[in-house]
Image (cartoon, rainbow, N blue to C red; front, side, top):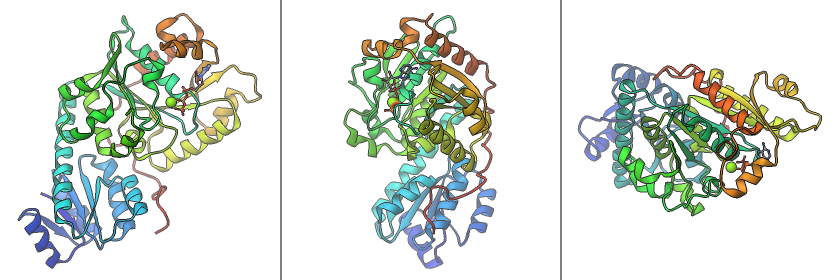
Length: 393
Ligand SMILES: Nc1ncnc2c1ncn2[C@@H]1O[C@H](COP(=O)(O)OP(=O)(O)OP(=O)(O)O)[C@@H](O)[C@H]1O
Ligand SMILES: [Mg+2]
């Protein structure tokens, strides 16, 4: 049953009446910490309307990594867009108005369902080896995320190497995996919108579109407006269920740290961080790696990939390594083969596996295959700094 942070005993009566008799109440963060230590199965924190945003966000950020099953529902006396965005970035599942009893009951139920689903999936993890989650990311538009995600997914799925792969297009507003692979978007993430809290293997199988043997794709919505309804919790559920079904889950991302992307960073095993050999791309990569450091996301998950290498533009791979202090894992050459195959709707790896571009992806796939799997359930290092995405409070 939920624990409520920071309300008076009088208000607690109201919560007990609204939600259930055994709602617990804690007055401050240290009591909350103690309560959660004593109740490792707790699934939900309701942050009362009078708790400051700074405290609410700190609570959500702390448990987002420490206890991913634990949901946080935030109550506010007024609903402001900035408050909502700030809260969701910190990892709050839902924000409800203090006097909206129905919304609180609904949010509580949904959050509990998500927690249960995540626990089920994680328990399944312990028995069967769950698939590895690979997030392809760069904050620079056009740096090659979709090219890398589609080709890497193909390379991982190649028979003989024998692994099943699900490619998730989480570039929710402008995703173009469907175009890159000439897939008919008859089913997309939009069809998952009503499934939050109840996704299972069968539902997932009904959402994906096959690309080749051993490789399915979950396509981005065709209506960009649907993107705002894809919550970080739904995205996480999609990833976790896919990881139960496939050996690899490759995520194509938008060029920004959206709430969905931040959630993917929390749960991914490997981050393929892309750059190209130009100053804006390098600056973006530097900002990204600093951001990941600030969020406490462990460096042993990073794989820095240089796309369009070989172009003579003054910068070198060594410059990239020196700037970010991380070695480059792979270099993908620049070649007309990439746009040429894109226009045909096939990956280079699929169409021409002997080509230098394909070989680079096959090598990268091999490297990822051999990289040690992350310890299941081991939480990443705690954030070294807080409030990166917060406004001053
Ligand atoms: N190694 C390469 N050689 C030649 N062209 C490339 C290479 N990688 C990517 N491109 C081309 O660059 C363009 C952008 O690539 P892509 O769509 O993969 O980038 P993106 O990061 O996914 O973009 P967005 O941020 O818009 O999602 C495409 O036309 C693609 O064909
Ligand atoms: Mg893209």
